[in-house]
Length: 233
Length: 178
Image 1 (cartoon, rainbow over the protein chains, first blue to last red):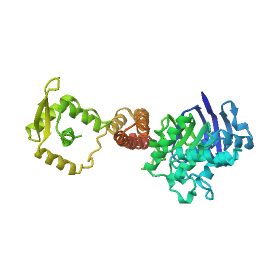
Image 2 (image 1 turned 90 degrees about the vertical axis):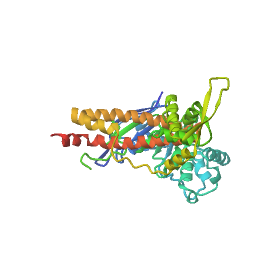
Image 3 (image 1 turned 135 degrees about the vertical axis):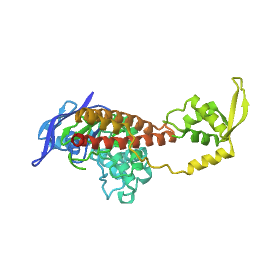
């Protein structure tokens, strides 16, 4: 069953086109890697699919809902309840402990403090970082921070996880450990994942790959870490 | 790969007969091409002739008679030498991928090379996904993970080359025109 759909999505920043009519379908429970060199539009596509940005033209469907026609308020609520977002740099709140950071989405959704804390610690445990529950991000390693960010993205048990270069700031060993655990957890939860990466070894964790180039689908998959421009040597 | 030296290394753990050696080889080098029985026996014959292994007994165990082989001192010295030798970084580009692209451009032009690269890339990605699944499977042994990693990183190197070459085939074609 298709859970997410983009139909001819166009998005520009001022005069600079980022997406020139992208159409993709994402099936429920699958992990899709969106790949391509920097500037190909993959982050913009993720933002449109996640309802963070509104496309200039085209449609974005979540199930039967036309997200592109929804107000910011409605999209924000959907993002809190149905979607999880994970960025390259965890973007944890520096003043809060790991457990407080992970509990945030639940507190925003109205869950009680004690219950949110319990769930947060459980998720930290699932991602192997229960020992830093009461530690602030500044005192954690990059890998620990990214695991906390992953726990925070998944604590509300979203149906779709959007991950934008989630291991881009980690060394390869830490990256593969996190990806291995992330994939195990999302398979257990049957969470759909849109995973953005420029790295083929990261795309290898996905069920399939959608390659972008210059804001369009690239069936040749040229995107991955390709040099840009024909004459560059 | 030097099957001779790998078999010497496996015998360093103690005497084994041919069948045990084959099994041990395939177990210790997961994801590698399994060694054929014939190759094991042929190699043992050569090693015995050269004094690197010696027969160390026979057992019958209800089935056919089997000869065990043991490492000799000379065999151990040869193994030690091999382990200390630095492998020369490959002096020539020997990949079939590379040869095929060069010939495709020469024979049929840039489109043929482009189509080949696109299809090859898809096959590489499929293999990369399969190996990543091995690596991410909690049931995999560390040996499997190390072997899968080796293959994944080599595929990744190929994929980067394919991506770069896809951009360059048109220029390559022009350059190769007489």
